[in-house]
Length: 408
Image 1 (cartoon, rainbow, N blue to C red):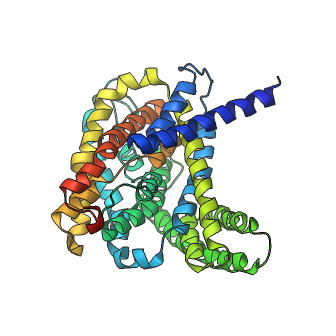
Image 2: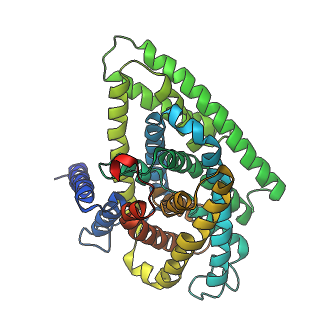
């Protein structure tokens, strides 16, 4: 059997494992990303699968493409009428919330890792900018996990809470990506000072928003103009619009992740031709993207390297869950008359997932020191977050009294 045939066979086996893992996650009420990562780690070089893979660049490329599909699908499936009433609190959480979370977690990382001798990014330990980078990387919530959760058959929180979380998780990823790349540029001396960094952030957001809405508007017209063409072409054209939104926006200096979500949001709320088919097919592509992304990220993990950073990473995970995230949520949502219990639930629902792990591959591609340790710390934080928060989120919604009346 040739190399291509073996590669196709391995890919098929991994996809089968991913599908069964997704099904098992529904029955066991375990977040699917944990099982996907587990399959990837088992298939990796230190697992029984023995697949040798150690390329952050490839993992980053695969993760980026998969995130584009996931965010586009999330935007398509979001009704403007549901997020319009929570636009202000959702966007405040997605921006100020990310910054506040990163500041608190970055400070904790600086205090803990500054003297952690096996984790040396700079001379004498972790510097403040490097610690802030770590905080930024894990500051965003996971859109894929929340979209999957709210599409499930379990009890749901109230519509207002769901809308805030969906809007936040879809729009804070671009903020985390922008802050990560800007900080890496500062750390590697490939960017200007603070003023230039702030201007870069503003330009990326504005260009991303305008380009995303514009491409989505044009894309919706194109999808509807297909008219009586083969129905299967409509989802393909819709997905092509998402890729164009991402690539074009990035090419002109905007944030492609923000653009692709907004393009999906505009397109999903404007198309009429075969809309349901478009939603169903892109949802299937989003599931495929989740499986592929987490399998690849799992392959990149070396379990033997996790033990050395586990104590401090677990400590940072608890700082994130019990201090950084709740503090940011309460500060951001209090002005919008959210009660204490809804704010507590929004805090606890801030699951980490794909984006932090993908962003954790960036330091290696920028040539930053100890990039492997950064990746390992972020990976442990994500796993702890998913285990602790993901497995208790349903019971937390009951105890906090934030369920929809029909689910109580």
